[in-house]
Length: 188
Image (cartoon, rainbow, N blue to C red; front, side, top):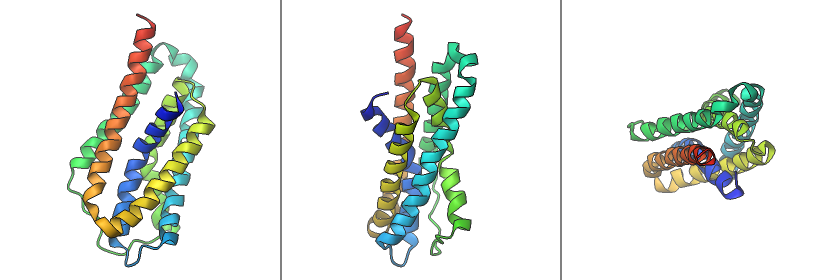
């Protein structure tokens, strides 16, 4: 996986954290840079750790599924992308209350938005990606996008959240399709 593709995947994976950041910024009385950085740290940390966990789980099973690992990577990325695309059409509203930045509120949110990164980590194991580089890029991109989401949410409103989630889902589907096509072309 090239560096450019890795940044595209990172952007796709970060879109759900961006959407949550937009909602958080929308409901904050004051969206300071410190608050945006705190939100970014929660989401960036989880988005960096989860691919590592997924990678090691995937590497454990990679030998036994080597014959169809490209289909597994394709299926996982398309499933995650499809889920994000479908979620972008739901009319979910941002909460009206000031969001809490306490761990009891932010940790479950950060975990929930990083499940797709766990599955992406499994697919990284199948294609033998450099997982340390991938995890660092995914974490950094997610930090920046979710922190930016807080500031954008405060200034521009929620109109970007669903569009970002749709774009992120589409990116994951396209990357999964590229992995499958490259593998199938290699056997043609």
